[in-house]
Amino acid sequence: MPNFKIDIVTAERIVYSEEVDGVVAPGVEGQLGILPHHAPLMTILQAGELVVRKGGDEETMAISGGFLEVRPDHVIVLADQAERAEEIDASRAEAARKRAEERLKDKQATGLDATRAEAALRRALVRLSVAEKIKRRRKL
Image 1: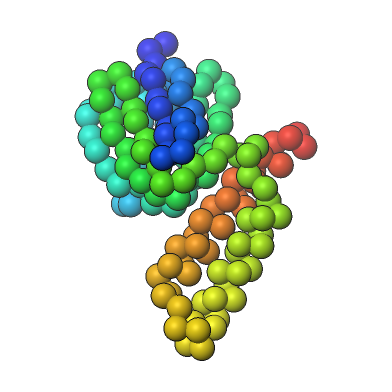
Image 2: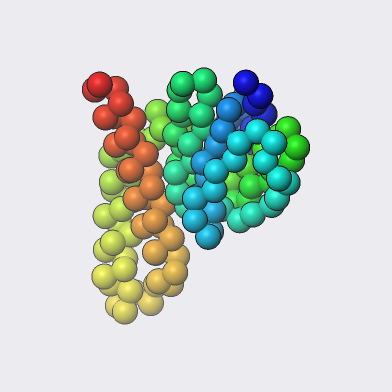
């Protein structure tokens, strides 16, 4: 079966770099599925779950936005932040969710930028969702 290489990178590190069968990424206009021989494109990613399919396996990652470029046999994800599911500390993500919700409640009192607080909340919710999925898979 034909496949393609994907590189998922942040400013700090290479998160993932392998030959895969497919990718599902959170584009700004909805989920974006990439299979071998996909038409070239470049798009903006939003915070969400990125799924890499290889053989019969899936690997899930939490990303907090960035860019995706599709080339003939290569996909590049330049992510603001990216974490593999097993790297996510669920207790830290839960604490971040609570902080973001509190900031949104107190935005009038603190003069906080609501957009930043909402973005922090989205990131925390994505991380919690991805961590929960990996926990459920391990129980099966």
